[in-house]
Amino acid sequence: MTTPASTSPHAPEHPEASAAPPPPFVHFPADLLTAALAALPAGEAAAFTASWDDLPADPHAGTGTPYRFRRYSRFRIRPDRLELLPHVPFFQDRAVNAVNGGVDRLFAPLADAVAGGPALATVVRTLRERLPGPRDGMDACGVHQIRVVATPDTEGHPAPEGIHQDGHCYVAQVLIRRENVEGADSCLYDPDRTPVHEALLTTPFETIVLDDRRVFHGVTPIRPAAGAGRGVRDMLLVDFFPPGD
Image (tube, rainbow, N blue to C red; front, side):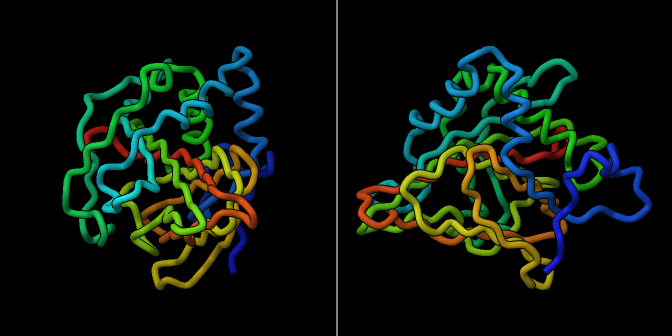
């Protein structure tokens, strides 16, 4: 199993300047984003994470009892801000999503306070600077807030499509909350579906950033921890791509 890209301060500042292609993913400990968010006014990071309590049920989950809750918005990454783009359905080709691909999925947009807040902008900028490959032209992003819940009677499925790609250039997977949960093991695979990295994200703001063109990924279902009536796993997903893509 390969070793993820180095997070050492001695790693090249601009991966695209390196002669050899960088590894197709980086696994960052939580302190990368917690340090960046610590520079914001008091309460901004807490308000950001609390916004996951206000996600509507995913209307496309296809289950009678909701286990998945979601918001989605797109942005242009400007030098001084995130520019909110017009709200449109989220679309993936069936070639990358056999479960929900090929159809327009309209999710509720991010709340105004989240979309225009400094916490989201800080997270997006921090991760864009550390993409595992060239970042020239990666000036747009899609932001997903996702909550998956599980009960003793019903598993929660973070990735119902199984081992897959998302159809973007880069994807950042940021853990926001993991509460009374078992499972949710993340695994990355090479193009031949051979595992190359396994991880259990456990600390808020622990992050995997991957080159979606060079690796596949999947997450196992979640179950409530022993004795718990409900398990909750909150994730922030950021898709990076060129404007107009």
